[in-house]
Length: 485
Image (cartoon, rainbow, N blue to C red):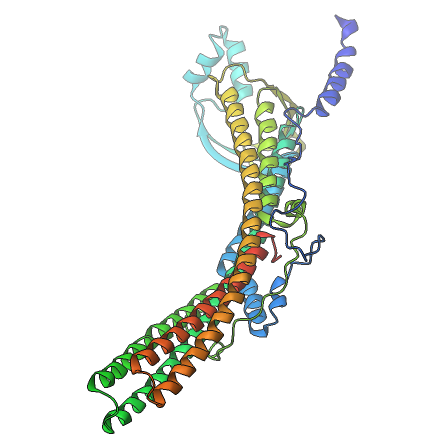
């Protein structure tokens, strides 16, 4: 046996070095989804290259919109919450990394204790012979009498990552932190789109209010005209009542529009992290719906780089893959190096002397033998989580493709609809002007004038709604393309 003693330390060292380089569990492979070569609804005049979408809202050429979005990115409370979650996720990386390093703790204690002779003798067994018994007990300490015990020292522990379980935990924590960062970017994308949408709706409400006020002005003018005609005997009582009813109907639509404008102010203030009413003065001036910029959607493959939610889903797949390795490593032995050193004495007078010192050092090996299926079941749990994350990634990619195609189709359809409604509004305006002239000459009745006026203002409202729909379709498309970060 003596000849093998020098062999065991070197053999153990070689095995330890070999196992330290081992990392169990599957190595992560980046998903490779199938993507089309081009968009089905690709605009004919659009370039294939991806435009810079980081600040897409500048293309609307609206300084007030630009300022609102910039303030929202700084003050939005959801963004601040996401930033805190990102900080926590990054801190978890440090927590995971720290497990691969030794831990050292300092401790001190004082005890007033008494050792029972019966318990001690029972533990040592029956010792016969007075001299032997008294000699042994005297070396142990004051048996049966209270005494003080002072102790201070250090203890350390270092788990050697033989099978890469700790490395896999670190990989999972890093991937989760990167997923949190992509979640923050995705929130910014949604925030910029929501601020733009609310602003566009506010501009449309201001336009509708302007049309309603013009309707009311026309209704007052028509009522005065009918009243004058009635006094001259050229209009009937029924026509006079029709004119008053039409004016009151138009007047009743103004208050709800003003209330909706205030609600839009409040919604924008919330997005900016402000109290209701903080933006009333800034948003009091009405503006027309800004003209959206041209779309350059680029290629479908650009979504994998641009869309934060796709990048987030991919990082979640990576985290789930690393978690499988961490679970598999629990099946294998764990080797730790432990040590303890310090001072221990019954009297403070000699507490710091060399004779009060104690120490202990050595390896500790643990191997799971029976866990009632817990370790294997945990591997199954992590593998199922990986499959779920992979399916979620694939769904996110397909959803992104759908959203872009929907946005391209809607933007194209709203552009064509807007052109048709623009022509219809011009024709309705001409028809109303002609009916008014005929009525003043007595060639038509009031009902025709009211009908033509109603048709014209309805056409103006439809035109406003179409301009809003076209602008919001562009906003949705920019969001689908991942613009805003």
